[in-house]
Image 1 (tube, rainbow, N blue to C red):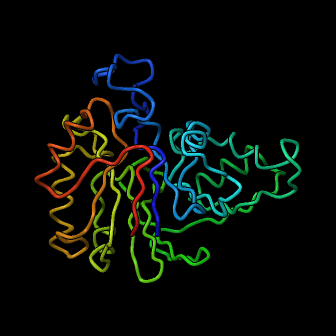
Image 2: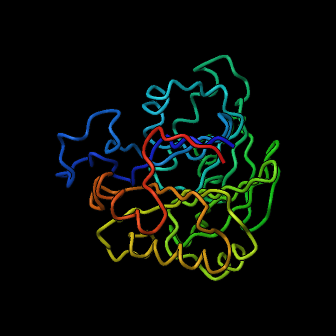
Length: 267
């Protein structure tokens, strides 16, 4: 699998909207690793994870063709991950399509919001269920429960293809026991996980600061989900949590590294 991180920012992005950004604005130019759009990713050019408010900018910056996206998977309904109005541009009258050229996978909340907004539009929506594996083309995907957006089912995602396993875990919080139990039987070949609060713990239990991420990684090592050779990248960064350079230094002792917009790697 080839993973491209299209966005690695938290809900307010970097530079933060309507906020005096903590990171030196002189370092935040388009293309710099401190310029972060809202979190989204692409697997093998055909599976799009989340469709947030920065989708068009990500398409332009990465020279993408959304017609290549066979599937769009939503993790949850928060606006930085789910901009429902973007879906309408896949169909007539915005183009000749009578049917959307992709299948949508989502939790019950997102499915309901799409169907409420576009009750008569021909979207194919598959409702995903926690801890139930489904086949998406050549991929197997299993959603696991995050501690975020409760009572909505915020879903972190486990993908398997050709014997390789990848975890995309954004907006995690500290996982509930049922997720830890599931992960004890999984071995990741690579993982992307949130570190929203970075170097400054906000106290909010629906996101991770670095001090909490370190505890998550330690427990994952103990149960065998990752080991010292597993590449771990972070995403969903708030400007309060530090610059890319600060995060590189702070994360180095723990065997992980901050992701950045446009980062591409293979699993």
